[in-house]
Image (tube, rainbow, N blue to C red; front, side, top):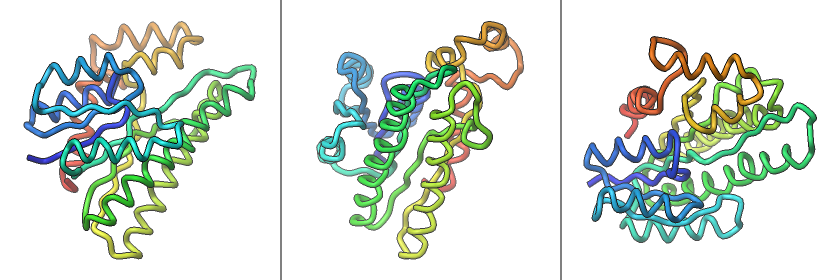
Length: 226
């Protein structure tokens, strides 16, 4: 049975990814900060799900990942879906720094841990959920946009590093646009017309996707490298 570990699996895209891989018969390790939500996922598929509380901003997060890998008996695919973002029209430094703590420091912490695991075990696949915001930026969320650009470049560089070292590690950088999740609705909360458009367009063909529809794109982008 193939094994995937998803960091940030308690809601949104991460949760939908977990559900889809469970349906496909994978063993799924789910991690996040909310224990009660992790337990709900475990109870939905007893014997197929392992859980671990992980806060990517904590220095002991890589150790917690190791614990989850041990529970799983290994890891074939690592997906990092955790991240934060807020509108910051007044450019408050604490919001920018909190965003960087999760989306940069936490990102490095977890991706490095997965990279070293796969390096030691001969092969693996690292996938991350970044954002289309990294390609151009959102004026209402400067730190969020910049941290997503960082993630894009970091994964590209790790791909090059793995190639230089002749490692059998694959990388997938998934850059969503607007997906109808609580996170997306929150970051767009100050733009009432856009938020209404996002909600109403779920009933018609549009650039706004539900997590379940967006999963099709994730599975297609990862299928040839798993």
